[in-house]
Length: 240
Image (tube, rainbow, N blue to C red; front, side, top):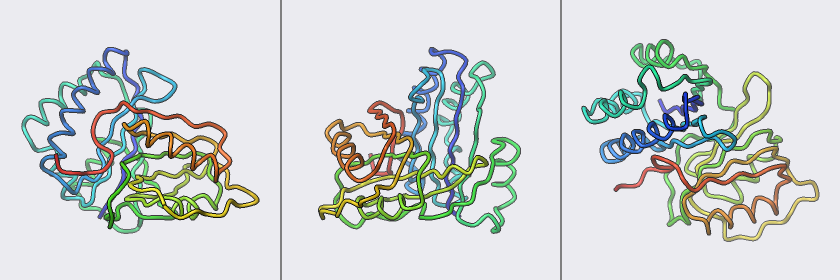
């Protein structure tokens, strides 16, 4: 059973956040090498704080979630990153397609008692889809305050390996997507553009970032857009 983890972590200092990101980069190299079903394993700073970190992890199966941390070098790096002085998490979400389907007891124990996640039902979309053609580069998109029409238009404009919408307790619709390709077809611009309050974009290629910005600002009414080109880990699994 696939699931997505979204974690927001408050490091105790900027230096501690820097050290954590270095360790997480090493952990991601191990996961990328050994576990192709960990589709996304990405760690970044929040746009507004040098000490707040945001983790996005997508696991194709429960078994790969259990297996990905077994490497001794991974364990060493994890212990360096998350020692008692590191800080604490402020939010841990586990997004699933079907909350009524039971997890394996060991998976549930880790998620419930160690990570203390809040389970969130996915409203629309898919956690992973294998791209069928050559992409333009990988982008992680996190949108907050989306209206109901944003999801459909998003999937017309972009080819996504992941694209899901969900709501938290404040009932604000959010969208998380892994984009691998831009549509080559020209779409008609709607008279009333779908609205998105905040778009967070993560991609190492600045040309791809600018291309995405131009498309999303043309077809959506966006209040603010933030781009990051520096991060640890990987957006979409590709062999090293």
